[in-house]
Image 1 (spheres, protein in one colour):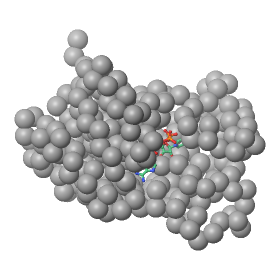
Image 2 (cartoon, rainbow, N blue to C red; image 1 turned 30 degrees about the horizontal axis):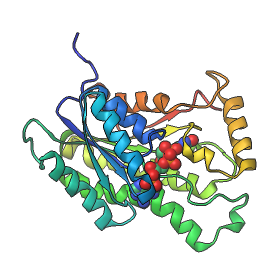
Image 3 (cartoon, rainbow, N blue to C red; image 1 turned 180 degrees about the vertical axis):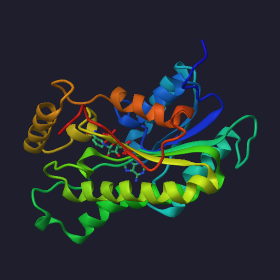
Length: 269
Ligand SMILES: NC(=O)c1ccc[n+]([C@@H]2O[C@H](COP(=O)([O-])OP(=O)(O)OC[C@H]3O[C@@H](n4cnc5c(N)ncnc54)[C@H](OP(=O)(O)O)[C@@H]3O)[C@@H](O)[C@H]2O)c1
């Protein structure tokens, strides 16, 4: 039977995908199962072994993988990731060997700092949250789009906290809200002209290092709230919950959807 979500011959860059329990790795596995070549990107030296393990898992699922270390928080960093991806997979701006840069998943992110009150944020804390969660995605898009073809997909991983209140991370949530809005603007800018769709997949609380690394009090509050306020079941999300929606958005099936935010939080209210 034909694979309706086939990503055969497509090259996908997934930033921040080097942790085997992270949302980025979950997306890489889903894409690999449907035939994509995926770029596993990480930034911290301490994540190198984990990134190589994710790549090994991707290959085990039948996909091709390239591992690239680089930071999205500067334009040269983003350029390095894009250029290395094209070199490693031997693709350029147009269709070569049936492959081209088909999708960029701006997944890297997370609260750089958590505080109970906005009053406690120092200027550098504000900047850090915006650099990682907003500017980084813009740099990646600026560097990638000139190499993308019609039918391309930009998928920004946002957060449900951009559209609802979650304690402890107001500036991170505001940076994700900025990303939601830029997604709308980019969808208009890149739609008719370039044939590229731009959407947000916005997870609710998902079991990865991110909640595990929160201070214990905040972690207990946020995890309790997420399970209590989800409508679908009494649990928090899994990386597969997020990856399945991202696969749909990456596939040809989502061709008539652009500029939208897909919340993936079990109907969290
Ligand atoms: N987990 C949740 O509950 C949740 C909820 C809503 C939204 N999200 C969003 O989902 C995405 C993935 O979250 P996650 O929970 O899977 O995160 P995670 O496990 O904490 O991983 C974050 C990833 O971002 C990478 N990263 C950090 N700074 C980077 C930089 N400057 N350049 C490139 N990569 C960088 C990290 O790389 P290293 O490993 O190399 O440090 C890591 O792989 C994020 O955008 C997050 O905001 C998560």
